[in-house]
Image (cartoon, rainbow, N blue to C red; front, side):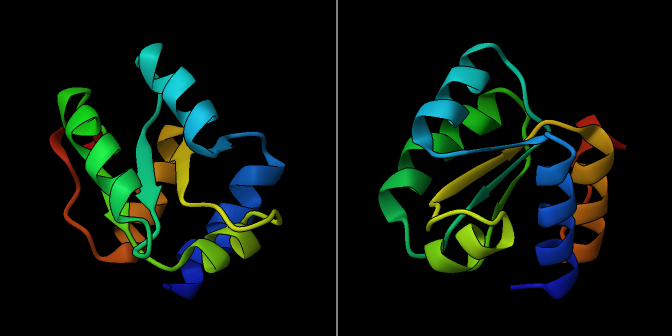
Length: 106
């Protein structure tokens, strides 16, 4: 996992801009909220369920780290999915992760 993204996840959580777990993420996506979806590499079922939905909503997706690493990054138990609900944090994570910037965040 990229150390900069790991650090940004902790800061974003303290700022109240991080939502974790399938039920929280699903509730926000139903409201068409979110700027970045991060899915653990060891969570293929979560990836299959949420990526098509994120694409429909124009939410970029990063697949990185393990459930354990994502949980540690946000100071919680292991997490398979994290939704960032802040454009600035999402842009910073995409930039630091080396991923291309999606058109909805440019």
